[in-house]
Structure formats: structure tokens, C-alpha cells
Length: 301
Length: 257
Ligand SMILES: Nc1ncnc2c1ncn2[C@@H]1O[C@H](COP(=O)(O)OP(=O)(O)OP(=O)(O)O)[C@@H](O)[C@H]1O
Ligand SMILES: [Mg+2]
Image (cartoon, rainbow over all chains, first blue to last red; front, side, top):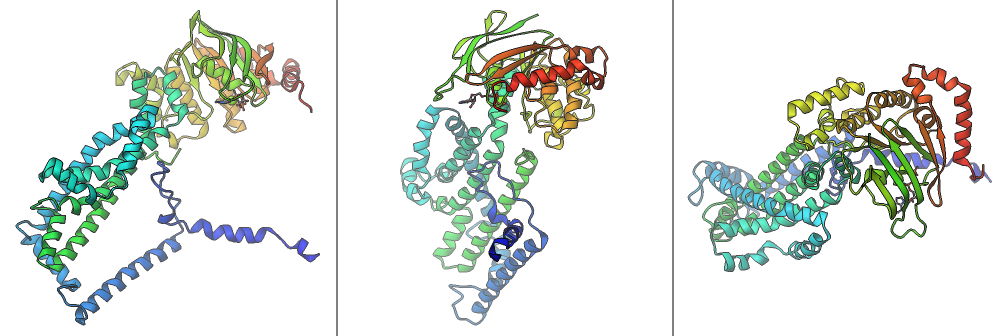
């Protein structure tokens, strides 16, 4: 009898309240499937800070464990040089260089390869994405090709590219570009498919030709999605860098790591890994800035 | 003075057993303000979409002075319920979109857009981004954008449907002012009984299954507003009150109370 009169609303309220405040970066909708996705509403300050402090603490603990292991000589410096040694190597490679190039030169060459690949895959991927998004024929042609290409690891098609195109610079760029193609084409297609039908109708009834609709409505609508694809592609391309620089390179971060590994110069290997990670982080940051400037409307309508 | 006419139009959507619109005719002249009203799902949007050229009728004809309507065109500008503005363009660039499509130089476009923004009483909104505008402001930008095409006909699908009651009343008189000042024939869909009566020169009531026009009521209240009579006094008129009851009856005719 008394159970009937127990208030029912409270447990629900209690379950909802904390859920609302716990949205972190990880709860953002998948950028590929939701092209208009934007950061979730700002989480409350206290939660945000506690997560950040835990991250900082984690990094400190890992670094300390690393330093301690190295200092106690538990592992030989050949296998695990100390953080200080890696930092010193950073300075020396930055100033004096390693295998005939300074760190900046290695970095420059790698960035040039990744950006050349990015431009190539944009030139191919955006039209392909538009074709997939706008026409059944386009989807019929390109969907299976991309689905075939997408899951193949770069190291698997690397030998074929060497056989076909040799060991020159184009092969390196091509390896990276292939890795970038699918994300760019697929997010472009998602963006094009997601274009608001009424906006197209509005443009048509304002006198826009089909070509003008494409240029003035479809492409701007798809731009947030294309930029998301670009960001994912840069990540994928950067990940492929080391594989690409397996091909008879004489400069580049991937090449630097591999030659260091051959001579067991472990501090350069570790330093190179940190540089690659750092640059990836910076690229991501820059693209997000560009998104904020270029598509400020995304997620607001 | 072009005339838009729908002649015995039927519309069948794929996979639907019954036609959405069954043999319906409607004409719209320059200077007309035709209001389409009726219960939800009776085919108002479908009929307007035929006039706009967004869909082609399954049978019957849609045309302007004998030329058949096959595609959307700038002679029939459309205002949408949820504005359908382009968020990547400023309010001003939204308004001047039709001019840009025609290759009008930027300076001329901007001048014209600012003129139109003034006409919809948004003189300062030109540089604003779409998401910085309120619902009522967005709808007015949408209206100015349609007017910029210098259309013969203005087709509006529940243009005030998403607005609050107060904004809605102010927008109604704005629509009448615009209609009086422009040489256009207006076709507007609305659920509002008072709105239909106040704005329309003709109110066409539709009923479903299949969608068709069951009643046409000629009204003159909009013209009285344009001639200077305040809305308040129009709405207090016994003709208006009787018209309201008559229209409500027509809309809900055959519907169990
Ligand atoms: N694209 C479509 N495919 C299939 N059926 C549709 C489509 N559009 C509309 N219909 C059907 O046609 C009928 C009329 O729809 P329509 O949208 O024209 O009505 P409406 O009078 O505008 O309704 P509302 O007042 O709710 O906007 C409805 O039964 C609807 O389900
Ligand atoms: Mg409708």
C-alpha cells in the first residue's frame, strides 16, 4: 500500500543531473557520421579541471617512472635512454643535425610530403565525394573502390607502389595520399548528402542554375564536413609518414627514426616519436582554429 | 500582369495508395493575396510546391500564362516556414542572393539588399550573421531575399508558423504592407484562422482524402488595412467575427467535434 505513494520523480532527476555535466571531449558525436558536429556544450568547470589534472598527473607519473627506470639502470640506456638524454638529443639534433640534416630540415621535408599528399587527395577526393553524394552512378562507381582501399594498411600497398612508380618522391607522396583519400571523399560525400533540401529549393527559386546551386549551396553546406575529413585525413597521412619514408628517403622524420634505429641510437628514435606526436597535436589544433574561422555557422543551425 | 494557374492538378506520391491532391484548380493574379488553409495533412504544402516547381503534378497542368511550370524559377520566389536562409552568408548577402545569381555587380547588390532590409524593418541587420538573428528577424530576411528576386509571385508556406503570437501579429501587417507596395500575387499557407481572414483577398479552404479545395471565401479585410484602417478595428468588426466562425466551420466541416 505505502509503495503506491512513494514519490517517483526523484530518482530520475538524480540520474539526469550528473549525466548532463559529464560530457567530456570523448562524448562528442563521431565527426564522420555527424558532419556538423561541434564540441558538446561546455562541461562544468570543476569536472573539466579534475579530468585535466588527472591527465597532467598521469603524464608526470609516466615521466617519473621512465626517469627512475633509467636512473636506476634497470634497463640499459641502449634500450631506454633517460628523459634528460632524449631532451639533450632534441637540442643537439635541432642544432647540429642527424644523418646530414637538422631536425627542422627533417620536419620540413616530412611536412612538405604530407601537404603535397593532402593537396593531391583534396583534388581527387572532393570531386569523388561530390559524385558519391550527388549521383547514384557516382556512388555505384566509387563506393566499392573506396571501401576496398580504406582498410588496407599502407605497408601492404607500399611494395606495389614501388614496383609501379619507383622509389622517387612521387611514390612517397602517393602512399600518404592514398591513406588520405578515403576520409576526404567519404566526409565530402556525407556533407553533400546532408545538404538541406529546402536550401537547394530556395536557391533554385531564387534563380540559381544547377551549377550555381552546387557552387553556392552544396559546397558551402558540405564545407564543415569536408574540413572534418581534412582533419581526419591529416591524422591518417601523418600516421603513414614513417611507412612512406621507408622508400629510399634521405630526409624526413620517419627516415630519421629508421636510420637511428639501424644504429641503435635509441634517444633519437624516442625524440623523433615525440616530435611526430607533437606535430600531430599542433596540426589538429591549427585545423580546429581554421574550422572556427571558416565555418563559424557549423552546429548553430 | 501574369496569371499563375493550377488546372485539375492531382499529386500521387510514390508508394501512397491514395492521391495527396485530387483534381484541384486555383488561379493567382498579380495583386491577389490567396490564402490556403485547412487541417494538417490536407495537401497545402503539396499544392504550393507544384506552383513553386519543386514537384510536378501527376496529372493536370501548372502554368503561367500558358507556359507550363517545370522547374523552380525566380518569377516565383518562395518563403519557407523555417526560413531556409544560407548560414554561410550574412543577412545582406542572403538578401542579395538572387541578384548575385544574375551577375549583378556587388555594389549594386548591396545597395538593393539594404533597401529591402529597410523595407522589412531591419535597417541595421545587413552585416549580421544568420545565427545572430531572432526567428522573426530571420523570417523577415527570408522575405527580403524573396523580394530581391523581383518575383511576379510570392509563395509562402506557413511563413509565420514558427513565430510567437506577438511577433506574428506584427509580421502580418508587415506582409500586408509589402504586398501593397509590391506588384506581386501572393499565395500563402497558414493554419491561423484570423491570419487567413485578415491577410487574404481570397481564402481557399482545403480538406483531405484526397486533398482538394472545398470552399473559397472572398474577403476584403486586408485591403481595409492597406487603406488605413487599424487592425484592431478590423478585428472588432462583426463581419470579421462572422467570417471567423464561417471559416472555422469550413475548415472543420465533417470533422467530429
Ligand atoms: N514526399 C512525400 N511523400 C509521400 N507522401 C507525402 C509527401 N509529402 C506529403 N505527403 C503526404 O501528402 C499529404 C499532404 O501533405 P502536405 O505536406 O501537402 O500537407 P499540408 O497540408 O501541408 O500539411 P501541414 O499542415 O501539416 O503542413 C499528407 O498525407 C502527406 O503524408
Ligand atoms: Mg505543410
